[in-house]
Structures are given as C-alpha cells and as structure tokens.
Length: 423
Image 1: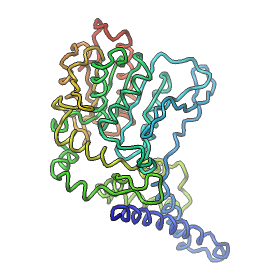
Image 2: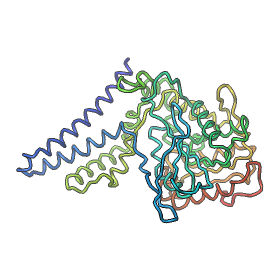
Image 3: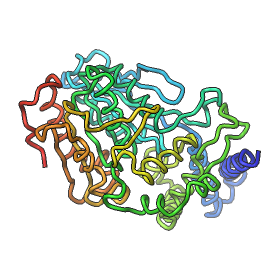
Image 4: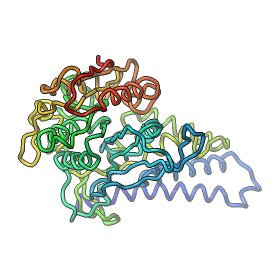
C-alpha cells in the first residue's frame, strides 16, 4: 500500500498542475478582463496554456499521425494501422498503404521499451514506409495491464519477439533500435536453434547495449553503482487505484521522466520559459518545434518492475548477452547458432547512451556467421537520436540499411554475395 500511495501521490501532483494550468488559462480568458489589457493577463494565459498541455501529455499515448502517403503514382493513399498479433503486453502492428502494391521489403521495427511509446519511431516509420511494408512492436503501458496478465521480464520480451518473427515469416528484415538490440539478437539466436525456417533474412542493430562494458557511459556507470536492492527500493512502485493495472509493480513513467528532465534541467527550463513568452506573443502553435518535441518527450509509459530490474541485472550488471550466457525458460541461448541471418550494426560516433563499441560487439558473438554476412557502420558526428530518426538516418544510414536488406533478400542458406557496405 505504501508504494501505491506514492504512485497516487505522483499522479495527484501531475493532475493538480494540469488543473492549475487549465484554471489559469480559463481565468485569463474571462471576458471582463479584456477591458483592461495587461501583460500579466497575457502571461497568465500563456503560462496556463503551456502548463496544461505539458502535464496533460504525460498520461496520453501519442497518435501515430501517419494518415496518408503520396505514392510515386502521384496519388495520396490512406495508411491503415492493422493489428497483426494482439498480446497482453504489446501488439504487432502493420502500416498498410491502401491501394498500393505490396512492397518486396518486409521490415519489422523493434521499438524500445524504455519509458516512451513506440511512436518515438514515428519519423523512422515514415521514412521506411516509402518503399517497405513496415511492421512495428507496439508495447503497452504497464499501468493499463491487469495483474492477472502475469509477469513480463526480459525472457518474456524475447519470446514475444520470437512470436512476432514467426508470424511474419522468413522473408522479414528486422531492425532493432536501442534498448531491444541485445534481446532481438537473442531472439534471432533462439529461432536459429528452435525453428530455423522462421529466421529473418537480416538483422540490423542500431545503437544498442549488446556489451555495455565495451565503452562505459553514464548509463552503464549508474547500473554499476547501485545495487538491485537500492533500485527496487527507490524506483519501484505499485500502480494506484485509477488504472486497470492497480497493484502491479512498475517503474513509473513519471519517475522516469523526472530523471530524464533532471539530467538537463537548465535546458528544459529555458525551453519552457521561451515557449511561454512565444505563447504570450501569439507565436506558439500546436505543431511548432517545441510542441512537436515535447508532446512526444513528455508522453511516458510505465514499465513492469520485473522487466526493468531484469534488464539492469541481466543485460547491464551480469552482461549475459555480452558473455553469450543468456537463458530463456531454462534453455541456454547460443548466439553462435546464428549462421544464415545477415547481421549489421549501426553506431553514432557521439552517442552518449550506447557509445560506439557497445553495439558492434554483436558481430563478435556471431561466431557461426560468415564474415560476408556481417556489416557495421559508424556514423560520424551522430548522437543517439540521430542514428534512427535524424538527418544522419535520413541521408546516410537509411540508404545503407536498405542496401543491406536488398543484398540479403535471398534464401537464408545462401552465402554467395558479400556486403559491400561492411566496415
């Protein structure tokens, strides 16, 4: 109950700030105040507008906002989001372009479960939907999942990926972004032994902590400094009475957001102050740069406690993937069993979350894979976000990934063509 009370207290704080913003905005728009135009009234309205929007976004899942696509035929085609597989903790969805011929490239994007929704990869999806059939893992907010659905840890996550790959079949190319990279590698190895015919054609790992110790960062140092007991005591709470997952142990999204914001508190404070001034001058808009960024950044989701704790303990502390010692349901997963799936790693030279060296470690683990099936790329000057959604992704990395996919679109057993973009 203590942890449920603290969860409800955080939600009460958020809700109160949203109400205060809405109240200030409403009060400032009172008709009688128009007779006395005063800068303080304009500032109060602007403060209320920005505050209400910000705190409201924290509990709202962003919309994908991908409704139409202009095909090379010059026509606008509707984009329908179909649910291919529905599970308690996450769905497999497909962005289907209505009226367009099915594209030969079938891509599965594995989205992170690290505090934000899969919509964080919206721009990645938009860039790939141009000439690919795009599928993505749409993870659910743990606060909305009843306790009766059971647990969800790194092993369950891996098995979800196995099911998704099996559903899409062997003509699939998997792209894992950030946090899921090591678990996607493990899922591919699991299939290599348990169901070789269901393996994807290629696997691209982008900025993921396959070996967190390869190049330490603040993230990996934090995982080393704290004990599991300290993490459980300070980070884990139980969902309060407002949501369907009441009683479920989670790492709350609001707590994660507080950590994110504190890391760059001065920058965020300046951004919000400037937005209030823009709103007061009538220069702010629903789709301006500030709102586009923070509508996504502030929208956070809870992770199950067992997923968060097992990620820290098994991926970061014990380095089970890096040591090729990962176990799923009591069965060892040997990454060396991957012998036909082409594997590519992408890293950003200025990535301060998954620094260069952490992701490329995957290639060394694939001891059963021919060198001709391995590739790597280090993007100069790119940070973490840029390697999957920024200019570096659009101009350099996306073409490399698509070339890698095309070079490995034959049958898995074929080992003839070398990857020209291998580093």
